[in-house]
Length: 285
Picture 1 (cartoon, rainbow, N blue to C red):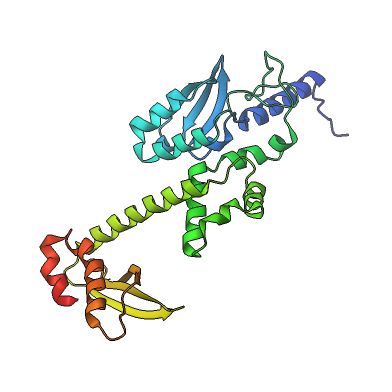
Picture 2: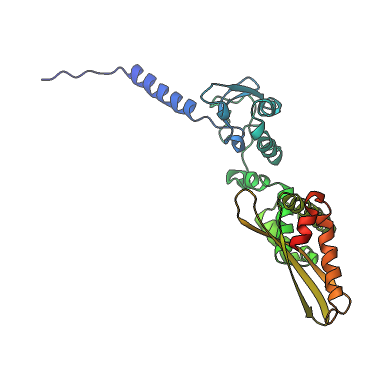
């Protein structure tokens, strides 16, 4: 009869405990999961969290970060990884107040050990990640999205006063507010100035451009629309942009000079900024 080896009960218990310990150490719960793209949580030492910087790999770079502040972590990215510093700072700002405290159901600290202080139970919203997801979007991003929505669809600013529109935004993200008409008006003007500067800068880099114009009437009111077209100097791709859509207050049916003056008024603010190419632009137009 074949002999059977008997493993002592104490050895079996030790093996089970070691496996449980390895599993616990292998997947520690991060106190700041929104930073998982840039750092990996390792353990907790005293009042400090220990993170491994993922951007430093394969080099082992452990960051000691106090649980009450993220200053050391931000400083590391500002000094060593400036290309990622802005994203890290924005993530920290968007999730301010969501970290620094363990939110365990069973009173354990993030590293799997026993917590020294009594931990509170997570709310339903926190359990399903609603608060974290909602706060991950900056208010400025919400404002810019609404501006693009209004401009792209040529909608009146008063739409933001609509209860149904506000309800839609709050349903999508309860933690954010809908900007007022006045705030949106300022943002649209600021966006317009940025786009104008960007377009002017691009046109200064090309030697030749072509503009097109179209005039029409609607409800006994005259309008002039103008576009500009050019070739990208590097890729040779065709590019275009809308220069203006202006109201014509004078009679333009039989007077070409009226249209010429309106077109000149559209050209001047842009071409005058690029003096080196001014003559070429005029010749092409």
